[in-house]
Image (tube, rainbow, N blue to C red; front, side):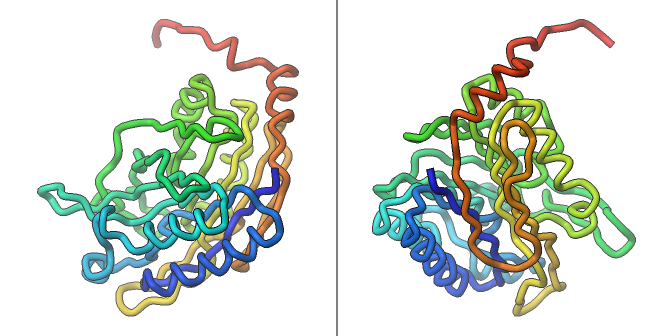
Length: 276
């Protein structure tokens, strides 16, 4: 099945980002793509809480979500919106970092809120406290599609292998990891982590990413690593998209999941144990 990752350099203007993604989706669908994936925070990359409160919306009002649903329906494609920053009704005012699986009729078939918050200091100059503005999810999600079950995750989740094993044991044959990875941790760990999750679970790992220096109206400048990746179930890197925004195509072949799991059926060998 022809599939496409969109590598983006999203700004802090959701309307501008929506127009970009719709155009890229049309181009991908015009080349026969049936499944399109976008990165984390497709609608708005911003380090400014003030700016986020100005432009982010509740799910029922979100123009990016509605616009991408309409485009998926118009093109007749499956769409993983890697994530959107979404306002919630939580008393503390924090947002949700929410991924959506959209079917070819434009309907939402699954939602996933990022479980693991990126609260780290990766260098003297680069500190992240995602939990300050975003509240964590508490539920793993498997999306049912007509090409197989998809385990939905986001970015920092990739460091927590038990989540991926649980998704694979529940039936996932594809794992999605949309991201806006730090350049420091990206260079050190991104490919290794993605390959490990693919090999451990005999799954396709599809990781569309934000890239570059993100245009902004206020706040600190944000840089992301890029290198959107596709890793096959045996661990081969099928796509490394480098640093430039663009569309990257590949063939998603379910038979390679069956073959990888036949050769090393580790999911059937998981055993409970005591200790330490």
